[in-house]
Picture 1 (cartoon, rainbow, N blue to C red):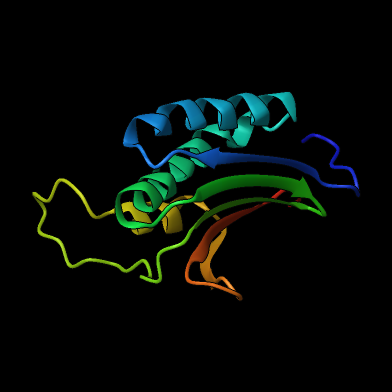
Picture 2 (picture 1 turned 90 degrees about the horizontal axis):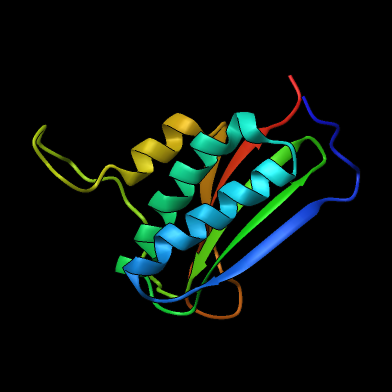
Length: 133
């Protein structure tokens, strides 16, 4: 397990309101996690990033942003958009092609949630992984 400094490592990206941008941001997340020594979490975090980004770009309002922070025993992924709508679980048939994003996030992250923005419409959807056992 990599040594996590007291001072957090932080990376942030603005996300164009275009679904084709999601693949590039996923690649940047993967490269950042590898550079920080978190290869063991990269597959799960990249998948969660893609799910949250897709929700923000398809259902949210611009501007959107993604941030990663590693420090104090945790890795935190946050995706912010400016839509007042809240993410929700959908009741799905087994043949549904979409709508499982939050279920995937909850299955892969140690903790997750939604925090409304304080001063204007929008929210930050976040997922967290503990870095120490």
